[in-house]
Structures are given as structure tokens and as C-alpha cells.
Length: 144
Image (cartoon, rainbow, N blue to C red; front, side):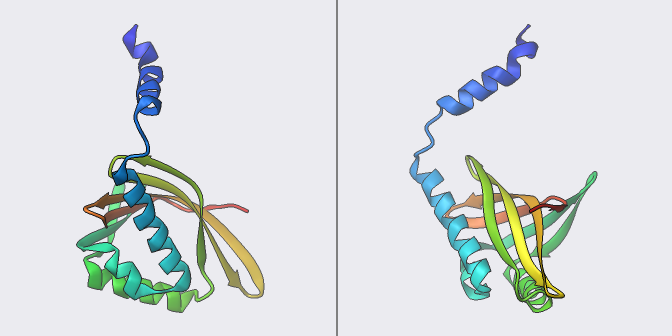
């Protein structure tokens, strides 16, 4: 019987938990700063907001591929990405915070051959001690 209502109980526990804790506010602030720096292509500020051993990973079916491990690898990845698509910008469509994890539905917008392109993806950020420690990127989907 409990298994049947487990999701409802879990949901009730989550909505009853306080969401205005300083930690939650700090996490949101760190991610807002990171995405703002992304939109300005300010790699220096982005690197200040991540831990020294940050990892970015792509989730693909039943495996996880490490894209960058450490600040220098992230710097290289960002530089290559911004050079390849200089018009890229991100917006947050939705955000869900749970402790040190924040799920973000990101909408990327860029110009390609005179057309505006859109793509959405789910990313999960882990923020510890005020720094982004890990990011998991899930496969992108077309969106508008």
C-alpha cells in the first residue's frame, strides 16, 4: 500500500520543506551569475564560479561521457564553443532546486546562416561551497 502512494508522500515532503534557505539562495545566485557570464562569453568569470576540479559530463543513453575535467579543460571547451558559435545565448526556461542539485531546462539561441535557431536541454548542476562542482548535460531537443 505504501509503495502505491510513495510518490505522493515524497512530493508532499518536498513541498513542505523550506525553500528560502541561504544555501538555496546562494546556489541560485551562483547559477545566475554563471549563465549571465556565459551570455557575455566571459570565460574568466565563469571559471571563478566553478571548483578547481569541476567536471562537465554528457549523459548519453546508458553512459556518461566526461567533456571537461578541471578549470583549464573547461576553459578550452568554452573557448572552442564560443569560437564555433559566437552568437550563442542561454535562457533558463525552468529551474528546480533540491539541496546541492539544481535542474535547469535551458534554451539555447544562436544564428546560423541568417536564421535564428533554438535548442533546449536539461542540465543538472551540483553546487558545493558556493562553486559549481559538476554539470550533467542531457541530450538536446529542438524547441521554440
